[in-house]
Length: 73
Picture 1 (cartoon, helix red, strand yellow):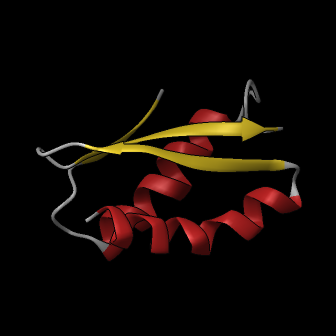
Picture 2: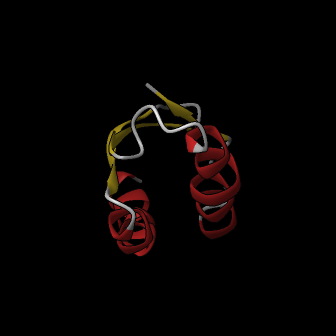
């Protein structure tokens, strides 16, 4: 499962990196929760919660339906 999540995150990474940010996979729990850490310009950005929910989470849930949610740590 972790590999699948990393593959999807690799699709998102160039967009985040273009704005000086990045995302790091911290954990995929047994109950389908993906925990990520936003880095660089994404860390502390006022739009980071929107990026997390409308970008990262939306794509992960679309590509890997067995996931339940994405959380920032």
